Length: 276
Ligand code: C2E
Ligand code: MG
Ligand code: MG
Ligand code: MG
Image (tube, rainbow, N blue to C red):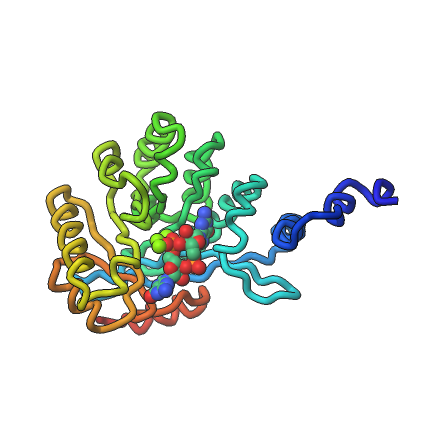
């Protein structure tokens, strides 16, 4: 009987399959359906420039508005989208949507888009990026692509070449979650990143924790000496902000300045041109 119902059904109800695996299987099928039905949307979080004391850009963050389960966070579905390869069409949609939205913002305001390592392994990422820029009319320098070091970890030479090809299109490249991987420093030598985004785990205990302060200070010196913009993630308090200013951090991002917001709210925020 299970056979007649199709292979997916059989797999789905297989005996002995543990609960998490079953949930994962269900999510895979749901993801495909959700993508087709346009259930994904982008929210935007401001990236603040501490020299100009104003918004410099917004990071586009993916959300899934599931009809039954409400808003689902990317931590829950991106690993599965990567497993199934769905991240490729999904990531293409993200690029087009983020560029289309950012093209409405005032000239200097940029947009940052996260890329999955899986997108790097597929042919045509450079073409996809160029197509998103062309379709939206967004100037290439206003788009920043965020990658984690896992991109450089696998298939390093090909991925490095891909990064250089992206740079040649005119977009900027940021290293995301800096400090959480194994050899972040080596990657800074292999590729000239425009920005390093220091992971929020180094920010959360500022300013009281001397270890965190020492690490932040060292990363700021590194950025300064390499000519790379430094951004601290996960800033939640005025005290953290003050410590980061003291250490010479260029940019910050976090709930203290704004949670990720709907596209419509971005335009409203920019009209008020808020200052820190
Ligand atoms: P990320 O790129 O490091 O993005 C920053 C995450 O930190 C976001 O979580 C953001 O909402 C959260 N955050 C911002 N400020 C604060 C703060 O002050 N405190 C705390 N505790 N958290 C803060 P989010 O939106 O859940 O995204 C999680 C991760 O999912 C992202 O981490 C990124 O790696 C991935 N992601 C999101 N959108 C996309 C996408 O379009 N494509 C791909 N490939 N990955 C994405
Ligand atoms: Mg990011
Ligand atoms: Mg990050
Ligand atoms: Mg992070």
